[in-house]
Image (cartoon, rainbow, N blue to C red; front, top):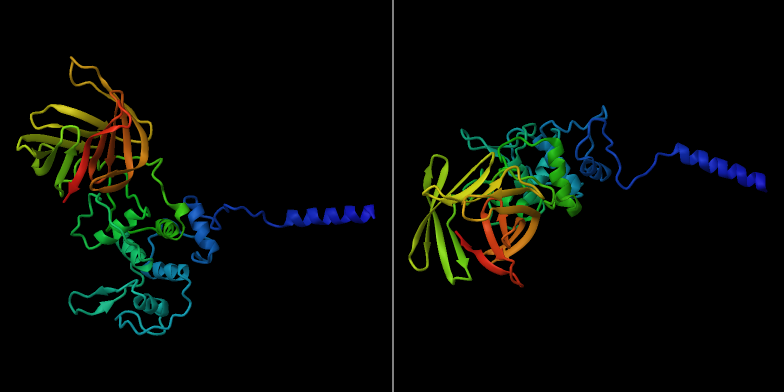
Length: 367
């Protein structure tokens, strides 16, 4: 009996050695994938990504429009491609991908392109997808809604992709680039499309902003008008952009008592500077900015230097104008906390010398 047990144990051991190890976080099935392995493996295990016959994924290649449509339909579990003919001039029944394209049109995910000369619609199946187009089809496919007050510097509200990109930002599917741009007309790679799709399907892949690096977007948005409230002094101030000179944005602040102050802000690769148009500086923020970044402002000889440290990159703060995600929290040695949001600037300042902390300055309205 003992011998039989030993033989069985030996067989089980050999069998275990022969079977591939299974991990909750499997390494990529593709030999050329080194970045975003978790996201790509997640989509592969669900049959959404298939890769190429040579065992590659070609992660850095630009994704084709037909490939993006196919991935989304697989992700949504669509297998019945019966749909009305979308009447595109460049893809007909019997052509590769026709069924998926027709179904995607029926579901309202895509609408194709329009020939400016003939006015006829076409799909451009093997054309590349841009980041703005990606935002649109994901928003439409998954009914992503929501809007943020902050804006990417290269996506004004007049841009055709603004609503969709804003929806992705609101749902934390994207945080854009470190300089507060989104690059809507840049081609999107296969690996980046996979990342956005994985974040849309599973919130565990979303970037909570803890370890992000910021290199721009903390000055006031020149496309907006700001109204700040100063609760301790019981007055408000309206800030309006009036132009720029020598790299400095000029703003006029008019308070509720009618007094006017002339402010100035600038931003470059080295950091963000705020002050007055007469040349005096009130504060600085160095770039690149990340968690635990420290710096000192020492502008006036008769005052103590002010020391700052970034204590969070992803605070959620609420002011009368609304709630802001991924706010940057800056703590000083003079008992203040400041909160900045990329694409909009300062949204809140607190006095922490008292408890509960009192609001010194808060964003009341943006329009």
